[in-house]
Amino acid sequence: MSPEERKTAGAELNALKTRVAEAIETKNRSRKRRSARLATETVDVTLLCFPPGQGRIHPVSQVTEEIIAIFFGDGF
Image (tube, rainbow, N blue to C red; front, side, top):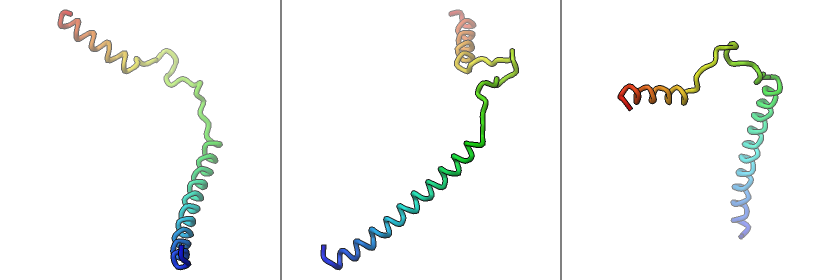
């Protein structure tokens, strides 16, 4: 590259480097905030969703039962 082209390319590359560094820093700050929040939040996955004895039918099972009822109603 000629000296003039190097000046132009150098300025463009420095601007790009600055934008990339800012984007990385933004992502790092976001990740640190998320990590700090997750460190304080806890979820007990062993807890029941519903009170004992009050389960729910799985949606696929419910649709299957409805389809079977329709076919039996039509005489199949």
